[in-house]
Image (spheres, helix red, strand yellow):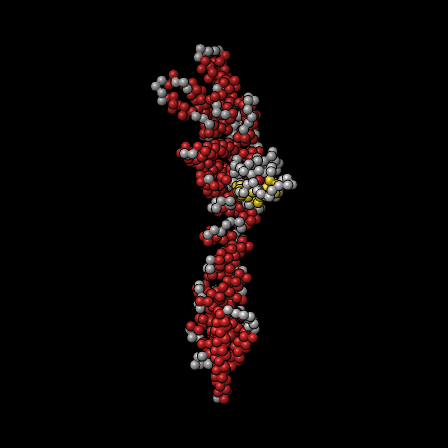
Length: 628
């Protein structure tokens, strides 16, 4: 996996001339932006780009296929179930569970392939039809490879049973005996049908396969006994051939040669054999039905060479199957990674093989093993999709070395288009104690709420993020709105701040100021007056809000009963003088500013008068109490 076998494929972007102009690009987690610059590769040129477009190049386009999305969703559940298989299970019980998981994966592939085939047939656009047909071919190859890996690596079929599995494999994927049989037998005179002998030749496979069933579990016949019986049958067929028993019927004599495993006779029927691995299994059936797994690679390579005959080169699928017959798991995974268009297949197959304890010794040089590397790549591709990213989270969870770091990097790039989506992301982060990501998401949501003038939501998110600076900013907006409108919005939130109000001084002031309103409404004037004064003298209230606080003190100063003591009145007077003495000197003002200044001056005069009257009343009252 560490070495690069060749140069990567070149992606041609229509309309972009990379030979003439310099290119600029920017990488993203799942895609790349590419555009031409105004700079030519030659020294003298006009500063005008020839291509004014920006192109988006996606790495994993398969995640956007509606049908393949079902493959990703269904296999996600199978993957999670596999991770929960009890490690304590051993022997046959564990093997049977792993085989069942493998079959579940294959059933999902086949279901998607059949649906894609129906869509390809129904496609009205020829280009779309070709595209869907190509996807059908890819899914078919994936199931073919997976099924072979299941036989060789997971079930680990022994000699005798191995060929039975391979016969089922060929029958499932390449043989067309059933459809040919229906066509021939449905004719008026089957023996005169053009395909009659072709059916007989292919049907020999089926008859022999049924005979081979005598070695299935439950039968007491040993492998040695089967070999002796087959040898006896083989010698009898060879005697018939030498005696020219069927010389008068070329078709029967040809069948006899096939049953003896004659390679030349088999190759004469090449048009009936779909491909070289069909030829391989047929050849094994008639020449070595009890083939051992260790000998498969010899037969596979020779069958490939004989079938191609030097006329063509092996396709990528041929190389993958050949590597599987050689029991080279890592080469299978490597070839699949190069040939297939996405990481789904190699990620899930490698994970399954890892659970079979077949990849324990293969670690990559950059700190991760093969299983984790492929799962990380697959999960990264899922994060490029607006909804499939939720599946990617679980794949990252089961990557013990680099999964959490990768999840943190990818989850920060998820666009939080809606609050519902943001809450999903937030819940995922909180479940995994990803503190920094939780704070970041809450800050983003708080900023969006402020832009939409939803101050209650903004304050809630800033408290959840434990962001003191932003909580101060939102609290200031609440106070500014109060000054303009004369009332608070989102009273429920402010009334129930609790310990959260200690996050910042401004938030504490907001909570305490609301508490002052509660006391005043409940006619607890003395408590309200003490709280109001403490907010000003402790300097927790912003100076810009002092005039509002002093104005709030006016009704308390005008009460029949003396609320503020003489000392408290002096402190209020000091606050008023501090406020008025530091008012900025303004130049020429417009009419509105002059009116505002007149209102402010009127308030100050009213406050001074009220404070003077209250001071006189407080002194008299306190003097009377001392005299008595």
